[in-house]
Image 1 (tube, rainbow, N blue to C red):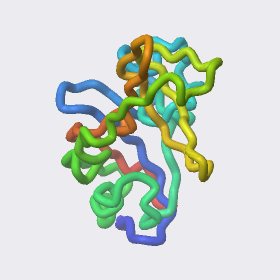
Image 2: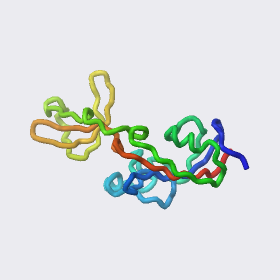
Image 3: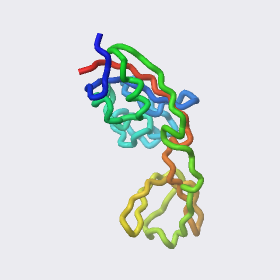
Image 4: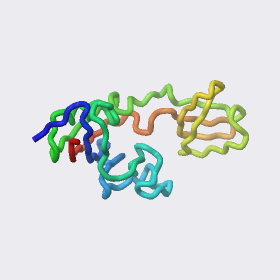
Length: 172
């Protein structure tokens, strides 16, 4: 039976979970969104644009890509090399190699006077801020007061070790 090699087009199914078992992403159609992430915002399964939210950010169903292009994490590509169609593996990725460690320095406070007047942020809002150079920074609102707003620019899954259950569906 053929084994997957770098450069092959492969099709996989996967489910990504956190240490507590919460599914944060999956290609499986019957996977559930994590309630504390995108589903509370009312997205329908398969229609969510928020990658890493648990609804998949992509169409449900197997994912096809060229092995070695690191579409997912490099550890997943490395694990698929040598697999045969139908084979399954479990890959654990430490936070530092996944979405990064949680960095307290990416939490910052901005005076409301420096924000657009029409911006009325609420705790939990996901926003895109830009500086004078039009560089965008994705943030989550952590706290608001009358005078200032505290933002977190860490990836929502920063600091989380993740586990991927992978099944190699086919090698083209």
